[in-house]
Amino acid sequence: MRLLVVEDDRDINRQVVAALEEAGYVADKAFDGEEGGYLGENEPYDAIILDMGLPKADGVTVLQNWRRAGVKTPVIILTARDRWSDKVDGFDAGADDYVTKPFHMEELMARVRAILRRAAGHASSQISCGPVTLDTRSGRVFVDGAPIKLTSHEYRLLSYLMHHTGRVVSRAELTEHLYDQDFDRDSNTIEVFVGRLRKKLAVDLIQTVRGLGYLIDPNQPPGRG
Image (tube, rainbow, N blue to C red; front, side):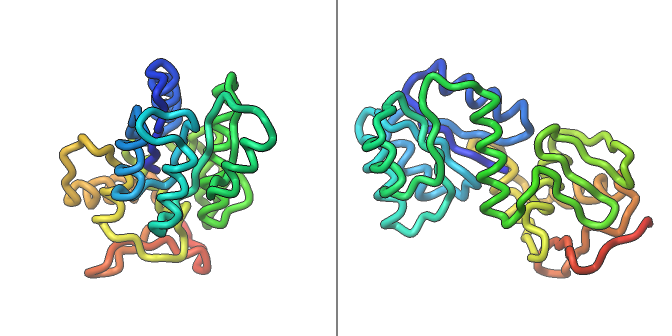
């Protein structure tokens, strides 16, 4: 999953990005409303953490512009403003959740997990398909209850596919959501990671749809390979 952190306090921005990356996400960062607004409108993020008090353009204005432009990316407002009226303004502008500073990083990470689950239509922190279970809280993967050791890239790939079960995901989409904006992207590497995942999982989970991409079908429980 790829996220954007728009926060002008560089220490907070760095801490949030570090926590996201430690949790297995890819994170881009912006330090003002102008840059953040541009990235949020033009890059395919899975969620955005947006500060309200930004230079160049405040968070509410940035969020309103996104929603007017048709950007449906889930947004968590992050702000020191704790008045109920400020919260109402944020939600009315199109926010999906609200975290008030100072905050515990564990709470913010839990809200990130929840907003990503809701956006993908999942109710639990554990996403299962056949014998494979992805625990988004612990960042672990299990096959028939046994833990499977994955690299960060392999985990992000499996996580994205399992969050989007039931639809074909192209290699280009995977590349856009698994790497940050500064990464030298090559969609051919996706095929390599899919091959490694299949070997480690040892189940017929990830289907190749020729010419289109990859599919995990929740209606056809896979068995052991």
